[in-house]
Image (cartoon, rainbow, N blue to C red):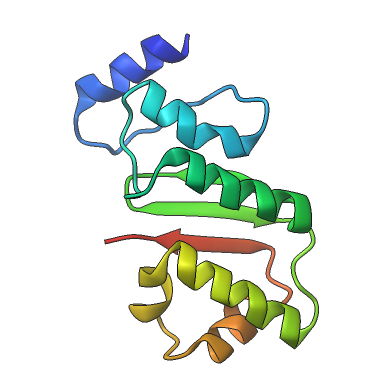
Length: 128
């Protein structure tokens, strides 16, 4: 079924539609994207992306909600609840998707951590 959906997505060619993917964990979806020749938003190996997502899933209860060519959205069940923890996670976000921070609304990690990580139930990332 996923192969048929992947073929339909490639046939559209505009990248505007999505594909539902059945995966044991949402962190497995990036590997499925490569396996089925779907658009990938990242430059690194899907295994590396999945490893970061798995770490956040285990620590914060994240779930992959959206994966597009230039954007990724996670729901967060248990976000960091202290300033120090949020700042540490903000540094991970920077390593994961620097464009989200360097080209976003916050000039440094401290305000990013306070407004985008601390207690937030959704994390959004994007790449140029």
